[in-house]
Length: 477
Image (cartoon, rainbow, N blue to C red):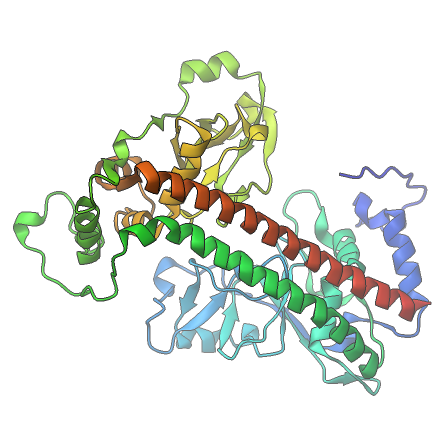
């Protein structure tokens, strides 16, 4: 990370003592923007800027299932991805149409810009969907006017601008690094300076960017296909269809032991177990997950002995589901790290996140996180070799195992797969002989391609904003 050092000689705005607000780079940018005739504040371009107020009192009972009649999606920060797109997630929330009507101020229209005002500040998406939606309290709406001073305002252009260097620098100065709870006020959002060229130029810039984005989209499609291929590598050898299994059934009282929920007694779970047990024993070893080399959290005695040693700590929120990459970590003496930092890892260990919705994000530990700490919200497995780690990583990501984890979930507010359920009920099909060698070879090949596609997508997205900034630079000269 680049370190910036500068001297603050005079403080005129005493309610803004953030060093980022006085960063010379930001001040130079503001000066550059405010001396150009095409620059205008976002407030002047907007019909309204508001946020999802009144949502703090939401209770669990206010949410409705996706199948609920007239349900309306409640957008959250997690519905905005890193590229400023509205996405679906496994944790999407819905409210009734009555609550949607009550919170009319935060109803989202097609063409609105949705902005994160807390947490991941300044993350902005263009709402281009055809369904109705509302916002939770962490998001705001920027509703643009049709035109300003005779110049048509294209939401796609403003969206791109607000995700570019020109706006991100301003967001950082306004609210990116305050002490305590960070956040953006509506006035601060409206104060962002926007370069608004003529409509023809907006379209020209958007067309240049679209060409690069289309290339990125193609690479992203290949990346997603690679992820699907990884999940299917083991499933293809098991080859059974769950779609024809009835979702309605009767469970006899003799089958009920200590659980009465529909997940545990699902016909699909029974079929998965039945099909796994029927696999040819010449090609597969069938084991209970409890027979894997499961690693326990370190003991209190171990912690006391090493409490002043410095370690890295990775929480589930700092990992991603696709390839199990690590996006960030804390580093401190063990005494200062969270009490849940008790899973001590070695290279090639596997960490299976327990929360339902995160179980696909299995991490295969790389060398840089050897002998570091992860959250007890994971189930830790230690394979015998790197090849075995790759094989087991793919098996755990397969639908064969992932469906078992879903049906064996426990808890209502935050369901997860408990270590006890994992050990006692999950069946793992381990391939043998030629099948094993072929699967390992295939997984390594697909994994390598997935990495390349992911890198290409990132490179193309970076090119999008570099191209955009160059075009804006031309407008400012």
